[in-house]
Length: 552
Image (cartoon, rainbow, N blue to C red; front, side, top):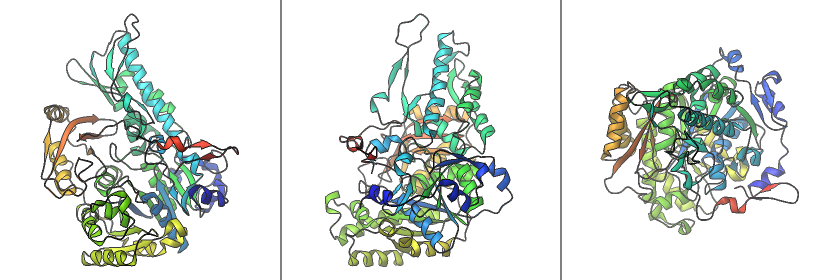
């Protein structure tokens, strides 16, 4: 059976029954049908004196076209922990429509390790991302309305962009205000994908609605003639934006196919944003569970670094252990094989590809200070000889390995992984890659050299001016959020093995005073992705029974 057939074969419990099993009372639930709900964020006040469970971070090697199954492993691990008697809860990100209709597909796991209802989660879910889109574009509308009526705030430069939650490269650079109406002010503009918007980042980093409103008011939307920042609060827009987000700030819950609780809330990309689900959902889950399994987007060079240096630094969250996910196919791809060759046994390619895995493991252990287990997402094409070779190599490096068969067996296929994670989940003393007081350039260079393995960083003149201005404005202590290709440690998506010395190339630096970090764009990264030659959307349709088909 495929993923959809497996999901349909499982009868789901009503979401209030799942919630009650994990300690969420009916009065704190806001149902969205039978199988999904929001949890009133006010529940945190009731739970505040409870001890926290242990937080487990799931990350991976650099992703490949083959897929590593990080979400699938996360779901299987949480189900596995529940199978051995631990109260385990998931805290994951919401899928974006960009990947669903693009190249990557959905983000609800696979096989018998899925969260459900799959199609609803992957599409509109509870409307959070639509709310973010509306809130973001309300700010844009109010900016252009302000310009139309005389520009009292003396905008010289607008830096706020519109957004939509689809991949559409044609909208990266646009012009607005071309209707020819009297007082209309034409200007250059552009779109980001919604999951890379600052509103999404603020949603995921806010502690409550008041904190959200404060952060929105602090967003820098442009600069005046004296090069002073203009904020959303200057437009008096923060109240209306918060009103649009009043429901979206409440965490969403669904269930795994084994009827265990999953929080799915917030969905920033990790290559162009900070890549972690909401702080509020994570903290709520930690008050309800013995273990909380969460993931950070893409590889440990991106999502895990931002999880530590942004999310943990600002929220006080501390992971007890980490899991680094890989597949033998993906390791062989990083070892130089073509995608079509990766299902055949090839020890030489596997040995070459292990270097990518070992670099990520070294970062997790020695840069982030987190105990780590490697989880191999097992496929039928994996040979005993390859598995033994990898096991030996990791043993020599002092790394624990677990073969996970969660796609085929669900939580039963992750019991060994669950036991190994429990064994190492004692340490809660993470290390940050850089210090808050470091200069912005120092922060960038520490990530580039210590995490990516680059020999240095090169900056455009414009990027250097932007850094100088940000520090002059007093925002040097903000964390940095590097926007970089997910496919390589370098900023070149085709440089998979990074066997020669490389540098990171910084093209633009953007101040995010609401999210309270600085975005650093490197290489040829775009904050509005494009569709592939054959989009996944071509295979999605509604069948004669009214069922959505084709999401993978």
